[in-house]
Amino acid sequence: MEYAGRLETRLPEALRLVMVKADGCVAIHSDGGAYKPLNWMNSPNVIEDNTDHWIVRNPKGEE
Image (cartoon, rainbow, N blue to C red; front, top):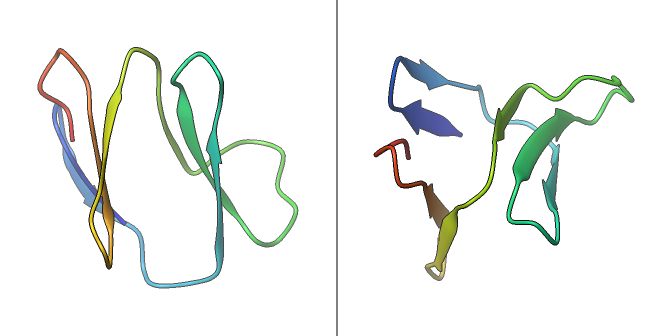
């Protein structure tokens, strides 16, 4: 998982829970049962579904 916007970060490859909420918010959680997400993007977002990955963009230019 990579994030580019105000900062640039990368989460190592692992089993993740990706939540896409009805309002367009996207949250990435670890598989360890942690309460807080590792990364999230508040709505509105546009999700581009490619065959091997998703790209999530917001109006601020974060991806």
